Length: 228
Image (cartoon, rainbow, N blue to C red):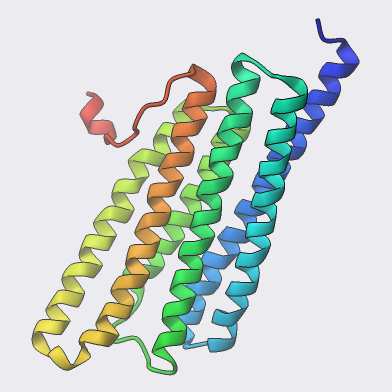
C-alpha cells in the first residue's frame, strides 16, 4: 500500500502534468487569435511568428509524453489514476494538433500575401472565438473532472459546424459570381476548415474527460434536444 507521502508526491506529479496541459492550451489559444488577426490584417510577420509558437507547443507535448510514460513505468497506476494519465497523453496530442491547425491558417496568410480577404471575416472570427471558448471549457472540465461540462463542449460544436456551413455557402456564391476569385476564396475556406477541425478536437478532449470519470469511451455528438 502506498504511503501518504508517496501519494502526495504522485498527486503533485499529476498536478504538474495538468499544468503543462494548461500551458500548452494557453499557447494554442493565443495562436488561434494571432492567426485570425494575421488573416484580417495581412500581417505576414505575425503569421511567421505563429510557426515559432507552434514549435513551443510541440516541445511541451513531447515533455508531457515523457511525463506520462515515466509515471506509468514508475508508478504502475491503476483505475482512475491510470485513466487520467492515458487521457493526458491523448489530450496533449489533440492540443498539439490544434496548434497545427492555427499554423495552417498562418500558412494560408503567407500564401495570400498582401491580398485582402474577399469578404468580411465575421463568421470566421465567430468560429475562432467559439473554438477558443470551447478549448477553455474543455480544459476546465478536465481540471474539475466535470462530465456535464465536458458534454456541453460537444453541444457547442454544432455552432461551429453551422458557421462553417455558412462560410462555405458564402464562398460558393462568390465563386459562382466571379470565378476569377476562386483561389483567393479557397484560402478563406481552408481557414474555416482549420477552425472547424479545432472544434472537433475540443470535443475529443471532452470525450477523454468522460473517460477519466467513467472508464468508458463514447462519442459525444448529439445536441441537447436529442436527449429529450
